[in-house]
Image (cartoon, rainbow, N blue to C red; front, side, top):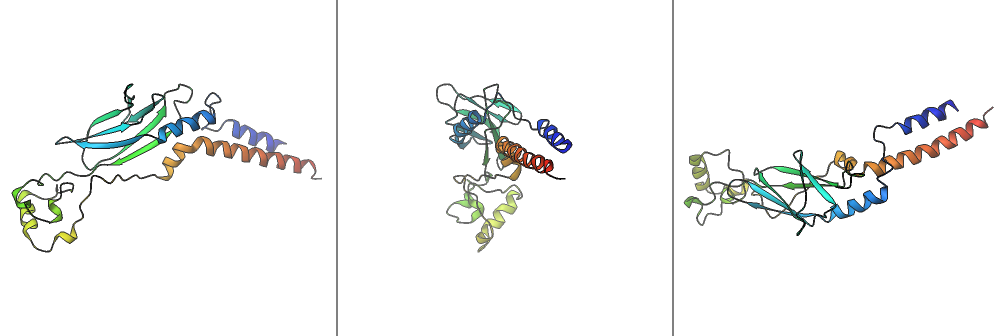
Length: 206
C-alpha cells in the first residue's frame, strides 16, 4: 500500500501537470485550427518578410519572444526583417487564457540566401549555378566570384537553393512540445492501471 501512495503522489505532482481548465478536447480543437496555418515569404532587397495566413482569431504566434496576433479582417500575420539563410520557428498558441500555455503547433520556414551578384553582367546568359538568384555567395569576394563563374565545367559542384521549396524540420523535442498533454495523459492512465494491478496483487501475496 505504501508503494501505491508513493506512485500516486508522484503522478499528482508531476512538473508537467495538466490544467483541468484546459481540456484535451479544447486543445485538440486548437491544434486543428493551428494546422491550417500556411505561409509564404517575400524578399525586399535586404531581408525577408514571412506572412502567415489562415490564422484563426483564437490563436497567437510567438517568434523571438514577441507575440503576434492575426489581422482581424484577413487572418494574416506579417513578420518583417528576417535575415536571408535563416531557419525560423513560429510557435502557435491558443489565446484562450485557460489553454494559453499549451503549444498548439510549430511552424518552421527555411529562408534561402540571396545572391548579391545575381544581376552582375558576368551572369548574363551564364548557366553557372553561382549565378542563381538564391544561393549563398557571401564567401566570395567580387573578383573571386567573377573568376569562378568564368571557369568552365564548375557548375556541377554547386547546388542552388530554390526559394519555392519550403523545408520543415520537426525534431523530437518539438514533438514533445506539441503533444506533451496527450503523452502525459497516456502516462498517467497507464500508471494508474499499473498501480491498480500492483496494489490488487499485493493484497493476495501472503
